[in-house]
Length: 399
Ligand code: FES
Ligand code: FES
Image (tube, rainbow, N blue to C red; front, side):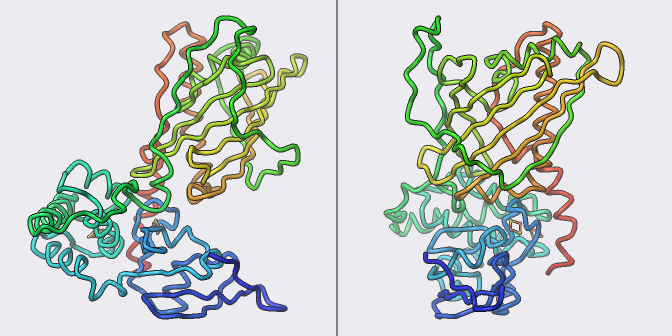
């Protein structure tokens, strides 16, 4: 892809695309997403918009042959790309087989999810070696349907795959690519905790991991407050124990013995069929007198396609009742690459609230002397279902 040119004297830019095999030039604001440009600029209203947060999959199109979220893709970033919408699959053989199977298996009711579902399902038919129900369900887990209960959809996709394999049609040679929308192929890997050395002298040599640049300015920031029924001194002391903090933070894994001012590790994130593991290093600072501190770090996924930088500042204050503490968090972050689609401030704030609640429960358990919780993978899909439900309620207004 190449950059689009801004029109002189205007905030709109002309973007050259190939849409459904036809070269087009559309005007777009720098902030316009591809879904709006396709629907409003090119009248391709088969691309539906539901959540506009990358959650529901209704807007799924093909971007250079890979399923992608149109609602999270800036049109200006697609200059030179080939886009295929559901209209462009009218004469596609696999899409035709899927449409027939969807009809046969009652795989749609209102049809709002269906264009995105067909685009995602076509990708599975192309690449899954066999009609494996579990893999189909995982592969379609980035596409939500509020009508059907999914059983008919899964049956339809299974039937098409089974039929094609029976006819001797093999999966595409690119079947090695992970299933799912753009971003799915970047990960699935895990951070393996290294056996931690027993003394600082044995500390693991720093790996080639991302580190925060000195000039970091966060693209987004938000604040968060945690209330804990423990004295401020005890809470501040626990926040100084990085291994304990990592054990309480969902998805976090340490990969080297932390020093007083450095920590190295990873954060595992899975969003439906998309999985990524960010690995990086953070610098820690503490101010005992002010009972405050900061963590500034950077990380990237194994393929280096998505990266994040961030800083967390915290201050432990006296809580609203005697013997309690209030932790004021100030978080700033920047997320780039395919997973940036999940970095929208509203979504991140919602996630952060839920992660903070889990983190708080785990800290409370530690401070209460309850067994340390097992580190768990961060599953934003589970965490954002509440947000998705609210967004999906607005679907019918956008058809
Ligand atoms: Fe794009 Fe929901 S509208 S994922
Ligand atoms: Fe899937 Fe209605 S048929 S949302």
